[in-house]
Image (tube, rainbow, N blue to C red):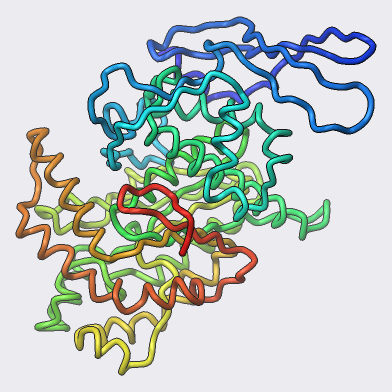
Length: 452
């Protein structure tokens, strides 16, 4: 368990040792400590060499590193595999705010690419679809290449990936997705903090993640919270699931809407405890001082044979201030009400959902100042992703829904997706500032792509 100690400390800056001549300087980088995938402690120098001109301002060559430092993106097995080798997070004691990370699913890839130098990694990073979206240029990437490598190594350890042998899907997920999104979040936090005077208390920035079910948003948030932790920031994670009505209240909702299949079970607008949402988000927004603590609600989806119920408060994790960022995620976060005739044309049962949605701005959206919207090309992806998850569960000997049950489950969400996603993608989330919205297009494999 020694390898888990990386979570209790802020990573030390890399140490430089340098020698110079009249025209150039060479250096080596040193990690004060790192852990391999067998949780063995290692300490030592990762050698790299380069020549940086000491005069003029030409663009410096990026250092070429030894294979011990830089990941090789290949897989020796040659077999088809998902981006996660074992589909589970490795750091057992890193459970963000008490939320256990479940199975991770992604499209598999047989493509392999060998990266043996910083130049190759740099080129791969710059080819990512999010680089320009988050305001980075090739020059800025070159200046921060050490951070990219550091974060990449940390994520490999978190997800039990072999940092010396990443396949194409793993490489994309880390360097084209998780790290760019993390850097964007860091920018948003810095801009948020700059609005306050030095003597003022800075409330946490609430970053909303609006993303369809099964697209990997929980894993993304899990990775982000981990990166915040290792860089010295506290973060709290809250899901809209945590604000579902209790089992008793959900039963009353179902009885008061007979025949409306969209409100028979939890999920759609109307099945959330909005006053409880306001109470929780307000309390979290006041976490500006040390010693101030707030419990984060959690929902137990396994209760009552899968119908679910709010977890006992004794099981809720606690977060303490000062808190710089809150990660708030949900499949319908940011949905805004539409004209009644629009939703009725999709599904007449949506008329009640649409009316319920009017109260969600004051309960949720007004707290969110920065948004990440995960965009899918086809809502039917949700069905495929859910089916993949259930098949994997059944293959592992765990209880899982049948194909017909999956179809019935997803059918209760698809009307809302068809009605509200077009407006979410074209206009942004309810009450959002376009300058603080990051729209990420993903493919059926859950990987970021260039937007249409």
